[in-house]
Image 1: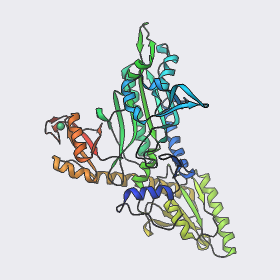
Image 2: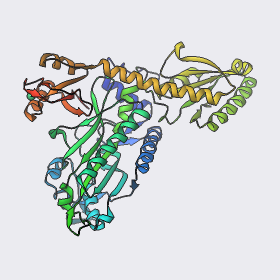
Image 3: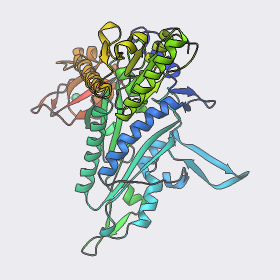
Length: 479
Ligand SMILES: [Zn+2]
């Protein structure tokens, strides 16, 4: 790790992000442009994300499965808006085993088609429904402008795919999964999100309805952090997914899909990080606490380390994820900087004086300097740390919510709107016309992020054309 400081976020947010990802050892560039190597520290964070989501999926009746990476090209062509949406981003395999293939294969950009094909075989009767399947995998989309975690050619995610007997059940599923993403973002990641409906132009290719959670990053831009789609009967018709209902009539199923990806790691970085670097929410941090033993002489070393290991065991027994930094030949100051860079929520410093007094120093990553430091008794250390981690988790969420509120405007006219999207979100009346949406995008680079589920009620005038509007939308520049 180099000693050089990152650029501040105000100086260059994008470069701050790029350097942070590399220096916190979350990910690295790959030999193929646009691909990403996720390093162990970044993967450990992703594993905690997957665990928090997976338990929620299973608690609502879903099971995991694995579908193939390769999909016949003809499958993608079966659903007309799906093919229009994904064709420009497809990676196509034309040769295998040294021979040209009869039919080209695509590397999955998403798995609606191959799963639709399987569901058509598996579903015969209403008794087979609902089918509730998720898979953890990676997909490939040939993106031109890439950025680690936020947009890469190959990315990791989960994709849920369900089939139902009725539209009502599919609608329920779509909203249930949106709620799960919201709950995960807020409670596990400390990331405030706005759940809402996408406009028609921002919908998933092949969906009747797309919902998303939108988060504000530290530069005021939006990031779509998870999506849930009601696919209607579009894929059921394209792939002939049908069932015999209880009266013996053949019906098409109603399907949904929903996904959250490694982009979310980017959201955590950009929501919580400060000018020093990464700050991780305790519930997802690979290490919640790092112990840095401090000593000069051999005698001090043995008593400090002995004490440190005892504390480590006690903390681990209390269910805390602990890292002991026993690296030789590095000063404590260097280690402090290193773990601050990597965003570990709490640092426990232990020197000979602390050993003598039976106390430790706990330093909070979210409050740098003296303000975040406290002397804490070694007695009951597990409970003290657990409580402090809870406080940090809450405080990170509150801070992010406060930031979003102070960077969200409710513009009265288009001039105010233009100003608002320079620095944050505009929550504005919108007439619902795709024309207005497109002009706004062209003139301000702000897109319609979502129409929040939480609406003020009543009606107003479209911020762009002045016509009557029934709903307010969140507009912002986005990643
Ligand atoms: Zn309008």
